[in-house]
Structure formats: C-alpha cells, structure tokens
Length: 261
Image (cartoon, rainbow, N blue to C red):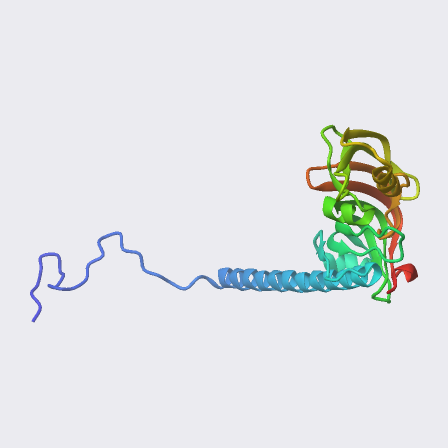
C-alpha cells in the first residue's frame, strides 16, 4: 500500500524533479530531413566504395601492362592518385600514377645490367584496349642499380668512392692480389653510364688487372631495360648503389622484342 506524501507523491514512485524532460517524436519536417541526410550519406558511401573499386581495377590493369611490357618477375606496386577515379576513367586518362617495380631484367645485352628498383611518377596515363600496352604523357623516374648488380655486369667489385660522384672498382686477381681504382660516374648519351678519370688507389696496375679494368670501365654501360621514351639525366652514387634519374614524354610501356627469352 502506498503512503501519501505531502507533495502528492507516493513512496517508491520515481521522481524526476521539476525539470524533468519528456521525449516526444520529432516533427514531420525534421523526420524528413533526417531521412534525406541518411540517404545522402548512404549514397556518398556507395560512391566512395564504387570509386575505390574502379581505382583498384585501374591499378591492376596498369600493373599488368607494366609487367608484360618490362618482363618483371613480380607485379609492380601501383597507386592511382586523385578522387574521383571514375571521372578520370571516363575521360580515358588517369591524372597521376605511381609505380614501383623490382628486378627488371636486362636480356639481349652484351653486359646485362638489371635495374634493382624502378620508381616512376606518370602523368596523364592512357591505357589502350590491349592490356599489354599503356602510354603516359610525361614521366619522372629513378632507377636504382645496386653495387651487387653493377659488379656482376662489369666483372669488377664496385662500391661507393670516398668522394662525391665517384665509385671504387676492384679487379680481383687470385695470385697477384687486388687492384682498386677510383672512377668518376656520369650520364652518357643513349641512356648509358660512363666511367672516367680513372685513378689507381690500391695495388699495382699489372697487365692482367689493367685488362680486367679496361673491359669493365672503358666503354659506357647501357641501360636497356627502361621504358621507351625515358632519357637518362643524371647518375648519383649512394652508399648501396647508383641512382639514375630519367625524364620523358609520351612514354610507352609495351613488350620489347629484344627482351624476349
């Protein structure tokens, strides 16, 4: 049985105070605004998901075209920039694409020098109906050539020199000992790396050592495994290899017959 209280309340009856707030349904106009906002949010999320799917498809096709054109053992990493991608695809040109590829082989060359790592920034990339071919309006690229790969191509042990722009090259002679020279590195015409200003820094330059060093350093070494249309601008020795910088316009990625096995 409830006991009456002076204020008209009963014992154990919940009391919310004089400032109690009672919930009530939103007015019809507000409900319509909520429904519209939720619908627009759902459409926006759906558009973003569709755009990301289109970007993933474009990245996959670009990676396929690059792999087929350059003969890389693995698919390169590809990132398409800009939003929305769907409108770029509708225009038939991707605004900017970044590609990173590893271990690009150099077949068909007298002194095959693989590109250890190639990074490219492509503007205005167009893809044809053939997945093996793509073309970019302009490209900036950096090819990294490890000293291990350079050593294998030149038949000498190559390492960074003690002065900027130079490398050390060592001819290893089992009986006579090692001979090391310092050489300046520069970009030469025809996308080649040239060695000049050669100075002996260790050992005696006997005929067998001179023959090995001449064979490796006297002629520029070509970079045959970069996309057509790229031009070598500079080379820079680093701690672990040489960075070769390229630029180009109307660069095409397609299978190169000379690189076929």
